[in-house]
Each structure stands twice: as structure tokens, then as C-alpha cells.
Image 1 (cartoon, rainbow, N blue to C red):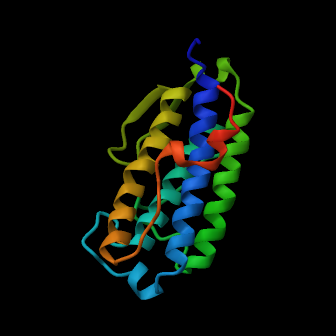
Image 2: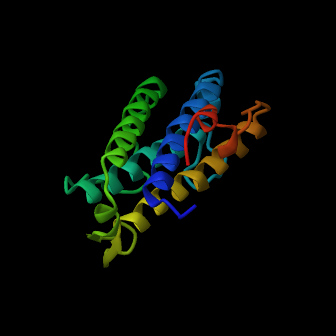
Image 3: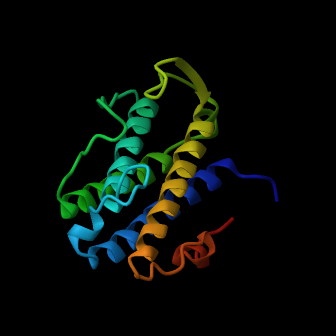
Length: 172
């Protein structure tokens, strides 16, 4: 079977929504003080890392949709309240899923230009490559979150793509 780029990005969007939901449910059972404890992680805490992921996704989606999302820092706290952060994460994941579902092969090859929030340089990449970065960035930081959850003595369950319930119904 030939590589299906649209299937791939849709699968990653669905996985992203599923695993974010799973991890937020686990973290909802962790005391807020533990979720916000500065552990020395790159974004300090579980809460800070979830905040960064939401901020980064909004930044990337702004670039992809042409509706810029402006931030002062990649560590900016969007939501201090965990329930608000969880609600906004669910909404953003659904937004990403819906947006990706509407893409075409032509869209994936479109060049996207932006100014990097990291080094302030002009950058340009194909939409497909940016989407892959968006999903891999999520995976990178979710790995940090699962480490912090584990260090607090909580079980975060299975996080592998193939454990996603939708995998049994998705067609290649």
C-alpha cells in the first residue's frame, strides 16, 4: 500500500487528542499542589508543561491558519486553573482534529512562512513538515509529563499509539 500522507496526519491528530485526554484524566486525580510543583523540568511542572503544549499548539495553528497567536514567551502561563487548562486543551485538540481532517494533499505541500519565537529568524517549511513537528513536539513534552506523573507515584497507563482505542476501527 502506498504511503497516505493525509491518513498519517489524521492518525496523529486523533492520537494527540486521545492521549492528551488520557493524561489530563490521570492528572485530574493528582493534587493541584503536586501538578504545579517545580520539579526542575523544562517548564517547571506538569501544569507548566501542559500549558506550554497548549501555547505551542496555538502558536503553530495560528501560523498554519493565517490567524496569528501572539505570545510573550514560550513559558507564558495561559491558564492557572487546571480545569480551565483541561477544557481549553480539549477544545484545541478538537480544533486541530477538525482542521487536519479538511486538508488536501495540495495543502500539505503548501509553504508556510513565519518568524521563529525561539530565535526571531524567518523560517519557511512545508505544512506537512510543520504538522509532523507539532505532533512530535507534543510527544516530546508528554514524555516529560509521564515521567513527572511516575515520579509522583501515579500510573499513567499505556501511551503507545497502537493502544489507542480508535486503532481498531481506523482504516489504512
